[in-house]
Length: 330
Ligand code: COA
Image 1 (cartoon, rainbow, N blue to C red):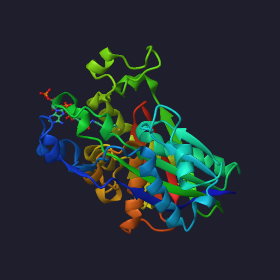
Image 2 (spheres, helix red, strand yellow):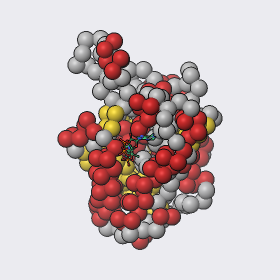
Image 3 (cartoon, rainbow, N blue to C red):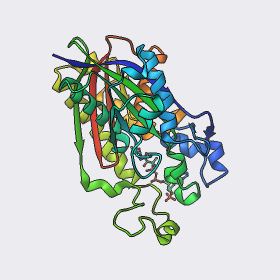
């Protein structure tokens, strides 16, 4: 039986560090409020002119280096983002071009915070089906250019950051690799976390009225997102472990989407695991949407928190609502 082995990880974040104190100058907020409610102390923002594909390129190079592979070894790209460089096309073929890889195909996953887990599940299915042997799976995001940086947008603006992460999945034997993935969604909550515009429902996609009303900025019912997240994360983790007949005690590290430190703490509590077993770096990067899990994975490896042979669980919840989890033997 063929499994998708995770052979390389890499991440890249912009150099510019934006601390909570920097946001205090732009809106009515405070370091104390942000740290207490979210755990975030700083995040990275790109300089103008940088695109999501630029961040992804650096992360992809590092993941390939980590795997001891070159861009030419990649047979397919799965690219998770909700902040592509332009309205269309997606970033996948741009990354292919930037890496200098022939005419390989690329699939874009537009699932917001759960995008990377969906991307891993899709790449794993391609590999197990024998379609491709080596797939580059990327999560990259530039949120900073799409936030309302005034008091009116403060509930969202303080949460997000920019960054990219990537992994290489390679066909291998059944001794390790992606063991199971579970994916779920509930469209009843689309409007609880969304950016309504630009929209295909309106001529011109974005009218002056919509601009004036700020309908292109993301909006969120934070309490409802929180309530669902703390239930869906543990549910998905249990379901994915059950699918491969493994127990929580065997897991070396849970790498959740970095949405909010309080969500991760509540998830650890509900699962009954010590908080050290749930990786957290949101204090330094904020919520980087589809990039947060691959950034966290690569950092966890850098810090020696995960090694070959370890059992790792990825889990995410976000806009859609869409959520899921993957169990991987490294
Ligand atoms: N700075 C200061 N005050 C702020 C603020 C900010 N950045 N954002 C909101 N507030 C204010 C609100 O206006 C409100 O004021 P009021 O009581 O005078 O009306 C007060 O703080 C409480 O707001 P509320 O939204 O009830 O706070 P909360 O305890 O629910 O925390 C979140 C807000 C966003 C931190 C929390 O709901 C959350 O984490 N939700 C999940 C978000 C998430 O993970 N999103 C990513 C999707 S994966």
